[in-house]
Every structure is written in C-alpha cells, then in structure tokens.
Length: 515
Ligand code: ADP
Image (cartoon, rainbow, N blue to C red; front, side):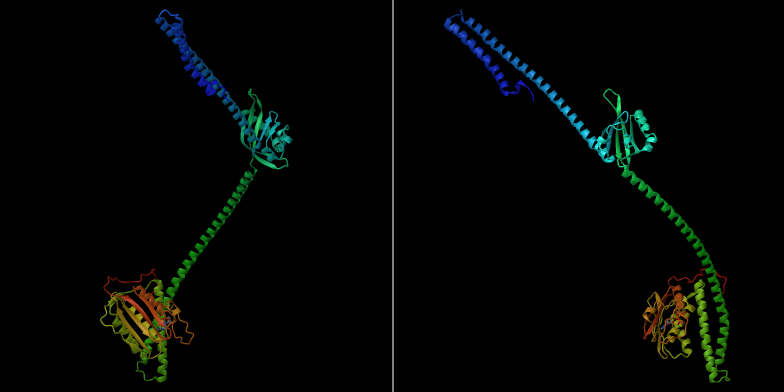
C-alpha cells in the first residue's frame, strides 16, 4: 500500500486552491489597509506614496506567497514520488521473494512427488532425503532409510565389484554421472533396473556437502528390449533355417531340372527313334501292300475265269481289308510326318470343283450305294493349296460320310466362295455326332463311343490329319451335326491370287529318316 501525501485528492486540491486564493486575499488585505490609511487616517502625504506602497506590499506579498506554496507543493510531490518509488521497490522485492519461495515449494513438491526416485546423500553416502518416487520404486518409507547408508538398496555383488567407489570417483572427477544403467534392490528383494544420474552438491561456500541421485525405474523397458532382442535372435535363426531349407530346395529343384532335361533329351531321342521306326515300318508295309492291292485288282478284273463266285467274294474281302490297311499305313505315315515337321506342302492354283468331281467319281466307281449330290457351283475361282493334300482331306470326309450314314442315303458335296476363301461342305444324313463330342473328334485317335452297336472300323486319325493339313494351308475346318439326323463337315481354303507364297510346313528338325 502506497503512503503518498497526495493520495488524497482533497489535499492536492486545497493546496492548489490556497495557491490561488491566498495571494489574492493578501493583495485585497493590503489594498484595504492602504485605502483605509489614505482615505481615513490620511497617513500618506500623496497618492503616489499610496500607489508605491500598494505596488510593494500588494504585489511582493502575494507573489512570495504563491511561490512559497508552489515550492511546498513541489517538495511534497517529490517526497511523495520518492516514497511511492520506495514502496514500489519494496513491493516488487516482496513479490520476487514470494515467487522464489513458490518456486522452491514447487521444486520441493516436484522432487518429493516425482515418480523417479530422488535422493540426497552426504559425503559418507548416508541418505539425507528419500522422496515418494523412491518409496514407490524401492518400497522403503523415508523414515526407514533416511540416516542409513545407501548400501541398503545396493546389490551385494555390485558393492563387491566396487560400484560405490567407482561412482564416487566419477562424481568427484566430473561433478556428475549421467544415464548410468545399473541395478538396485527393493525392500521385497526385487531387482530394479535403474537409470542413475548422480550430481555433486555444494554449499554456499563452495564446499562439497554430498550428492543427489535420480533413479528412474527402467525395468519394464529393459525387459521389453531384452524380449525383443530375444525375438530378433529367434527370428534370425528361423530366417537362417528357412534360407538353408530354401537353398536346399533350390538345389533339389536344380537337380530335378537337370534330371528332367536329361529325361527330356532321352524322350526326344526316343521320339525321333519312334518317328524313324514308324516311318520305316510304314514304308516297308506300303510297298508290299501296293503289290497285294495291285494283284487283287488284277484278279478281280474279270479276266480270271478260274475263280468261282465264292472265291471272288473272298478276294473282294481281302482287297477291302488290304485297302483299309493301306489307308491306316498312309495315315500313320502322315501323322508321323506332321509331328516330325517333315510334311512339305506344295501349293498351286487349281479348281476345287474339278477336284470334288474327281473324288466323287472314284467313290462312284467303287460301287458304293450312297447317292452323291454333285456340287451346283460353277465357275468358282481357283484356290491356292496343295492339291494332293486337299484331295486327301476330301477323300477322308467322303469316306466318313459313307461310313457313318446308311446305304442309299444321300451325300451332298458343295462348294462356295466369299471372295477370299472357298468353303467345301460334305453333308450326310447319317448317325450324327453327340454335341459333347463335336470338339473332340479332331483330336488324335479320338473316336466317338458308339455303345449302340453302330461301331464302324476306323482309327481316329483321319480328322486329326484333315485339321492339320487344312490349318497348315491357312484354312479352317469344322462340323455341324445333329445326332441321328446327319453331319455337315466344312473346310475353307484361300483363293489363289492373294499374294500367296509356297506354303510349307517347315521341318522342325532335319532328320536323316526317310519320308
Ligand atoms: P475314324 O473314322 O477312322 O474313326 P476320324 O478321325 O475320321 O477317324 O473320325 C473320328 C470320329 O468322328 C469317328 O470315329 C466318328 O465317330 C466321328 N465321325 C467322323 N465323321 C463322321 C460322320 N460323318 N458322321 C458321324 N460321325 C463321324
């Protein structure tokens, strides 16, 4: 609280009032006094005398009073300011002291309530203070340990190892030890891993009076780190184990690969041998079969009267079976060439309708009972294909039509062009093909299972060869069929004059085998 004289506004106002009023009052009193002397008592000889008196006493007096009051007011104000400044300084000092005390109290509260253990020790290592954190961590109440040596929480083996001396040396040399990880013992014998910071303490004269110690309980963290480390080690061991297994598996895989490569090479060799063998056997069979066929044809030509009807029928059967065998041999030979990549195509421009007529003519001359419907199309553009191979395809499709349709049933062969391709169709009114079999009949050796006793001779090679021959010439082949009603096989081949080049199925490997 300030002690200012001018704290009251009244006093200040009164002084100001006095400074104005008192000079005027003195002047008026002098004036009255002089006027009374002059007019009533006649004490002045003349008017000039009166005026000079008035000037001297009526002016100097009030002016002196004015200055005097002003001087007093200023002095009071200065004293007042000085007092106020002193009050202010005292007030601030008091506040600083209170703030410092507050901070001290706060610091003390922080220290005593800290979750970390904060202790002070004298030079002999005797515990001087023991905060709440220390109580919580080590389980001792302050009353139990203050005044005792801090050895009370020191593990015996660390004392044996000289940790007490080492810490004392460090603190003495550097003034502190920071973040030193060590162990202490709680009241219940529990080991507590702590992070220790120890600092030397001085008194006001600069003498060492002891040290402070802050101990943070890091047991959980260290245990967690140890667990992670252990897990890492286990993980590394597992990774190493798996890597070894993987390496072993890779080695095994490489070994198997090598074995497979060798097996593959052997298989390729076997395949080549097989192709050569098949090719050779087929060639060797073809020649005698041609001779047999020729001889039978000669015998049946009618110029051999020595044979009666029974003999002729037998000869016909032999002839048919021999022809079938020839076709089988031819088929196997074709498959073997196709698979060996040794089938050479020799395309040329030719009229497909003429070829169809030729093939139908052959069949009609064989005396089949089926009714052939010749192609209606006339003047079709020439196609670009291997004539013999196309004839083979056509022959095979007509052969199938005769095999899988009843006697006397019609077989229609037609050809049409769309400007890019000529499509040839062979339709029969035969037994048809089950829908689930339509995609499979072009596979090698695939035959439709005719469990209804409509089984016909065959080997399942014809359509496989047809597809390979047509596709090798840039065409396509397919079938539409209704079971029990008949089938239509269609193949298309490109027209001639479309920038064709000789199409050839280039051999995949040059073989020394015969073709
Ligand atoms: P193959 O006739 O010698 O058995 P193909 O490859 O020529 O061999 O024919 C495969 C199968 O397709 C035949 O077994 C047959 O079941 C069926 N098939 C072929 N053409 C016809 C057809 N025109 N009518 C009915 N089924 C057919």
